[in-house]
Length: 494
Image (cartoon, rainbow, N blue to C red; front, side):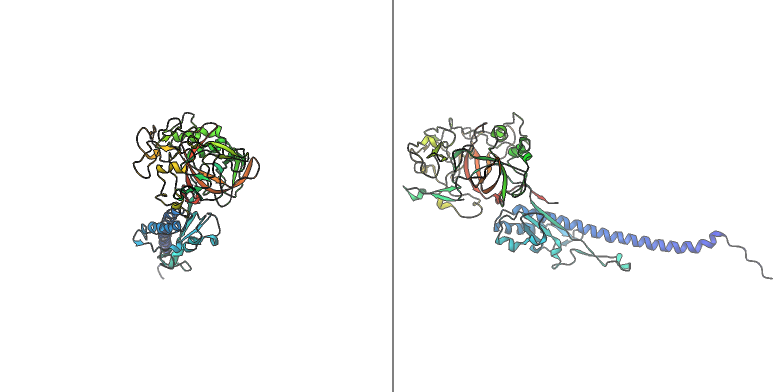
C-alpha cells in the first residue's frame, strides 16, 4: 500500500500563479515606463519647437512695416532667431528655411490666405502678422518634427514615430496713433509748393500741411467754415462694428494719455469716428506730455512726460523776428467757403505779415521738394532741410527772420538743443518725442452724422508746442508717415 502524500499548503499551491502574475506586471510596468519615456521625448521636442516658433514669429513681426524691405528684414530676423536655438536636448542645430515663415493681414485668416515671403514682398502693404510653422521644415530634416519611438514600437500596432510640430502667429496689438483725427487739408501725400521767385525754394507739402508750421488742430476744415475734428473709437479696427460706449471719456482717456489705440493699423478700411473731439474733457490727458498730472487724468507709468517739456509760447520764443502774433498760423476764410491759414500752400490774402505765421521750426524744418523720395517710408536719416536763410523766401509776404535760432548742427532745432533757452527737463523719467502726436488724416468731407465711418489717407506727426487748453490744440506739423510703419506692441496671438 502506497503511503499517502501529505496535503499541500495553500501558499504552495499559489506560488506558481504569483510568479506568472509578477512576470506579467513587470512587463506591463516596463511597457508603461517605456511609453512614458517616449512621450516625454515627444513633449520635450514639442516644447523646443514651440519656443523656436514663438521667437521666430515675434522677431519677424517686429520688422513688418508695409514695405518689401520690411518683409526682407522679417525673413532675416526670423533666421537669426532660429540660429539661436537647438533641438534634441540642445544638441542639434535647427534646419531653418524661410518656407516655415508666412505673412497675412489678420491673424485668423484661413491657411490659404497666408503668403510666402516671396509673394508677400511683391505686395507688402497691410501685412502685419507673421506665422512660423515648423512642419514646413520636414523637407530639410525629417527628424526635426518626427521622434522615433524606442519602447512603444515593441507594442503591436503602436506608432514607430511620434509627431511634434509647432506653429506660432505674432503681430501688432497696438498702434502709436492718438485717437484724434483731423481732415487732410489736401488728398495728395506729397505735392510741391512752387516758389515763383526761385525754384530752389520749391517746398514739400504733405496732405496740404507744411513742415515747421504750427496749426490749431481744432480749427481746420478744407471743405467748409465749421471746424471739423473727430474722436476715433480706439477699440474697433478698420471695417469692424464699433460701439457708442467706446467713445466715453473713461474708455478713450487712457488711449489719449498713452497716444495709442488697440488695433494693428488705421488703414485698409473705414474707422468708426465721432464728430467733434471732446477737447474740454481730454486736454489734460494730452498735457501729461508736459509732466502735468495734477488732475490725475493720466499715470506717469503708462503716459510718461517728454524728456523736453519746454513750452514754446509765441509770447516768449527768442528765435523769430518779428515776434509771432499767435501760437499757430493765423486763420482766415477763403471767400467765405472754407477755413484756411496764412501759411497754407496757396497764396494768402493781401496784408499777410510775418507775425501771422506763428512760431516756426520748433521741432521740424521745411523740406525742399527736390529732397522728397516717393517711398513708403521716409529715409531713416530724414530729408535734407532748408536753412533759416530761406525764411525770407519761404514765408512771404512780410518775411520773418531767424534770430538766435540753434545752429549747432544742420538738424538742430529748439527741441533738440540743450540749455534753458530751448530745453527743460521733467521732474520724472521721460521719453523723447512724447510731444509728437501721430494723428489720422481723414478723407474729407466725412459722411454726415454724429458718428460716421471715415477713410484714413495717412498719418501726420504733430508736435505740441505748448500744452493744450479746453478750446485749442496747437501743434507743429512734422511730416507724414505711413501708418503701416508705425511700430506698436507686438505680441503672440492666441
